[in-house]
Every structure is written in C-alpha cells, then in structure tokens.
View 1 (cartoon, rainbow, N blue to C red):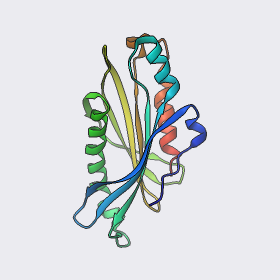
View 2: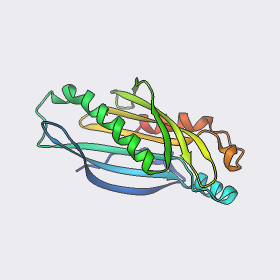
View 3: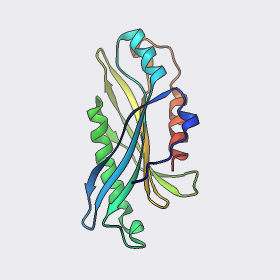
View 4: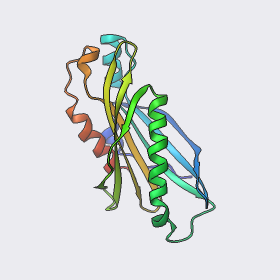
Length: 184
C-alpha cells in the first residue's frame, strides 16, 4: 500500500505523530483501507504548553486509499459521493477522539489541487476541550481522485488568546489549504 506524498517543506517544524495502514470502512463492492500520515505543529504545542499547560496544537493528516478487491475501471466516479460521506463521518469521529466537541460539518465546495484534480472540500467547526477552557477550532478535509483516492485535512485553534497566546491564527487556514492542495 502506497503512502500519500505530503509537502515536507511546508511541514518543517511539524512532528509526525502517527503513521500506518488500517481498514477505514466497507463499501458494498469493496473493503477500503488507508495509509495515513498524521502531523502536529510541535512549535505551537510547545508554546501553548509553556503558557497555559494545555496540550493543544494544529494537526494535519493525509491518507491514500486502496480498495480490496480492486475497483473496476470507472467505478471511482460512481462511488465518490459514498467516499465523501464516509470521510465526513470518520473525520468528525477522529476529531472527537482528539478532544474536539460540538463539531459541525459545513457545506462542501470544490477546490483545485496541485495535480489538476478537483477536491471536495469539507469544512468543520468545533471547540477543543483543553484542560482549562473550550477553544474554538476549525478544519478542512479534501477528498479527490487522481490515480487513487486521496484524503487530506486538518484542524487548528482559532482563538489562542484563550490559552494565553497573542498569536494571529488567520494564516492557519491558508497554510492548511496549501498542505491539502500539495498532497498527492
């Protein structure tokens, strides 16, 4: 199973916190496995930990899907909506496992990725339940098909003043969208 390719130069200062393959879900016609890489912004985590003691950061993940048995030619276009639906559910569940609450999924839109494909971009909002306060957060997940289906996304806090940092979080959205755009 192939790993997704991530834009390593844009992940400088981030730490890979997880890597592996797993069965993600089942479709009527195949099992869906994924090879996933997960990164956290270690610089931000350290700053927040020093300031407030909270264990909060930005996260980015990328997954490349495989189907068993292999899908017949043309089936990818047919099952894309089912893949997007499953991704919406599973990403929200993973965010919950990482301490996010009150997760809302917004209206999906299209985004061009570096390979020329069009990704379905799914926005999320929620709150991160830190040790001391609920911190507003948002995230995005892109789903697209090149040679294989790719899923890339992440989440970030939107108000760090709540944990004692005076840092502008506006660039976090743009940086996350760039990470998604350049994943293959």
